Length: 107
Image (cartoon, rainbow, N blue to C red):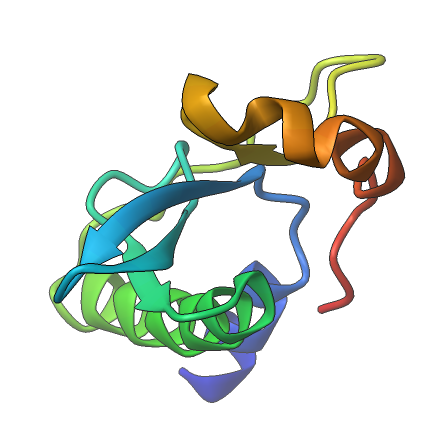
C-alpha cells in the first residue's frame, strides 16, 4: 500500500493557502480543493504547506485503507496549481507575492 500512497502523492493536486486567525494571531490554512476535508494549519505559509504534505499522506492512506477511491486531481490548462488567498484588508500588502507563488509545490 505504501507504493499506492506514494503514487498519489506525486499527482498534481491544486494547493490553496488561506489566511485565518489562530488565538488572535494571523495563521494560514493549507488545503487541496480536490481532496475534501484535507487541510492543515501553520503560522507561516511554509509551515501550513509542510503540515499539509503530512495531512495529504494520512488522508490518502486512510482512504486506501477503507477501500475508498482517492479523488484524482483536475487538470485544467493554464489554471494555477497553487494560490495564496488573503482577506481584502491585507491584499495590498501581498500584490507582488501571489504572482511569485504561481508554481507547482515540490512533492
